Length: 329
Picture 1 (cartoon, rainbow, N blue to C red):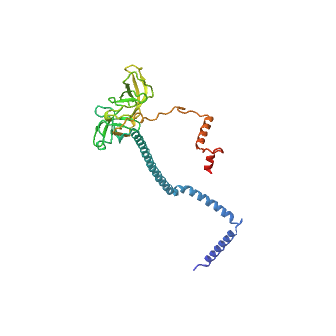
Picture 2: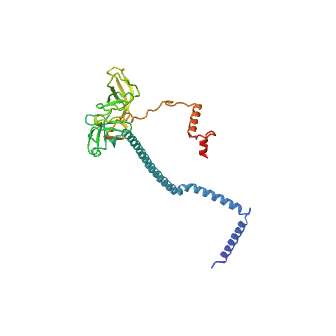
Picture 3: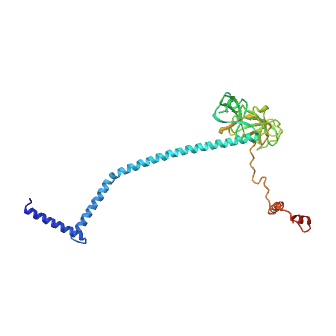
């Protein structure tokens, strides 16, 4: 039971509280507005300071979560980028092999050679030779010794060793290699010899007085039964000539069509053509600007158009041609 003094104190506090509440609810510039403003200012400063002090701690969890997500995304993007690079490389290699196979099939089709396609699987010297390659075709594919090897550009070499599933090919550029060659324009024949360099061959005409000029193309003369070389395969182009006509030491430098340092898809000629394809397998020579083109004048073009129109126009009957008129009626 509260004493009388306590009850009076409680009553006074209640009345005072109600008074302050009523005055605050009325708003305006009452006696509490200044106190309320002061308290709000102090509270705002304290909240700002607390936010500044504790914001790194409260945001640490969000930062850690964001960092982990970014690291995971970067790793995923790097993996996808690596896969795309691999696919692009494989696609380029497949496209290059397809282009080489198409070129090989063109040579085989034009020259009527029956070939066993193969791919170069190793490069390096073998036995007493410096320039040889190993291909993934052997006796099981019909390959035999002394068969010609070609690619989409021309002659590559000949087979010197055969196993069941692979064979060794002596490249045309080897210093011990030689093949009978024929000049496409003059039909002159000679001997093409390897120099041991990948970009150069030597050619010596059998007739020292025969005509030979830079730019002449050479094809294989052919061997008996097509071994070791079938006829008509492009060899290379004359790029230099030393000596003059009549000299026994007259030698021409030949740039081979086939780049032996970048061999991939090749073909072994397992059956020679029935007839010599002559020069039909040679790549077309690029025309000089304006070569083979005759500009037409406007009058010539008009005459050409008139000729076409005349050919397509039916002759009309005249009044004098009575038979024709009656027939049409």
